[in-house]
Length: 637
Image 1 (cartoon, one colour):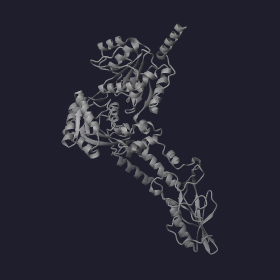
Image 2 (cartoon, one colour):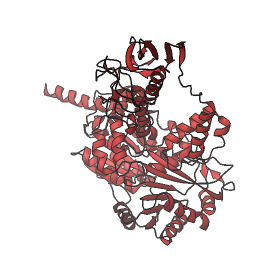
Image 3 (cartoon, one colour):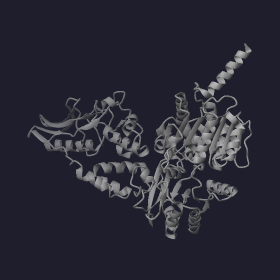
Image 4 (cartoon, helix red, strand yellow):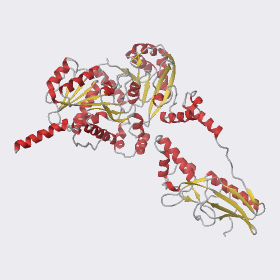
């Protein structure tokens, strides 16, 4: 009986790797999208997909999900997880995360002279180490224990060095899972990641993460230069580095880089990307010569010196850190406020890696963001933080033969468009509107101001002529009538009329578009005013002045109300003038005829608080009546 039980246990352990299991993600500290990614991994494994790719924008915590995989996938006792990255900084980050998520696991490192112990449960290695003879020796050491192979920054996975590791592992154990994680699943050199991974099982890109309130929004500037890139050759989807560096590393252009920083973002913490090591050094020297605290680093900088440089940058001792491709991955400094891209590129993958360095919210709000369920509240937390937005400054060179990638082009704008420090997403929305209304004019604009001016001029040409209500004589001596323009009205969910609804509604829609440009602004406005959506309608109303003996009565009516007296006068001109003034106030939103009996009981309408003091925090209560433009108090009826 005991032997049978042992055999059953061994069978269950084998099935944990060889067949799908009903393991559910358990990590209460994870954010919702991280749990969704875990669930997607499990679901696709149940479907038999064992080579999976997960795409998460920079700053969304790929390494945290990677660290949960051994437990999530229910690997059997004795199985080993191998994680490969290509930078020392990434190796150290992964080891730290694995220790936090797998308290009982033995974690080894395979790098240069360091060798992971044979009883390791998890091994983190550099791709440079696992090459040729070292790879053969490594696989022989661990045999068929490698049940999970994870590639961090998996956009490199199509390279021969990574493919060799995948092929060697699968040749030894065909049921091993291969997982890739990257922020940029599309390579610029035409090599398809689908040749390595069967499917992208989960994806959250930068735009979606910003909308969800997990990354900071982006403002941008496009700084034009006179540098000509048409003579620079291309290879593998981007510029040839040597030729590019020769073209852009000039005295005038480097001075332009420093001038752009001092003009747009003086004193802010900036990460600068250059075309070569020499370019990085020259740009850093230009910053220092202009009294800006700056340093530079490259892959040739000694490790201890690089650590000191990053430490000074992180603490604020240095304001500007210049580098050449060193801090594209594994560089986690959330306090970076500015990306200054002095390295022109045609690669969307490379550019996304560059700008992603500044999109993390500051550490002070990381916890509250994780514990907040509302995307709107998360965006408000970011807006109120010391880093409400990242700023990207693009050096835009002359390039008629090349399609440059800039922040503007990532958002669907022409690459030369200067957002002039505005939110790039909002400028893109305005440009799209202009493109629909006047494509020829859209082709000529070069800045956010140009776009806004063009739309305003189109509106001024095509805006309907304002028609003011006028009196019509029903009977010249006894009865005059004025039809008022249709007004949008609504009731709240308790059935009460919302005073000054149209103006308040428009204010809340405008506010929502300002703080959350991709949110449903009208739904937000309805929530803030507690509107019953079914009650929103356009109401037509009119004012009549009728003779009643020796006085003239001013009467108001609309779709729902019978005629009622709102004023009295001893003469027809006085009644018409007073009524016209009342209409002017109503149309300007200063006062309103209530739908129920007036609160003051004397026939005059109650007046809501003025709406021009900014969006309120809920429905505006009816307050004291307006005295503006009134004559003497009429006698009580």
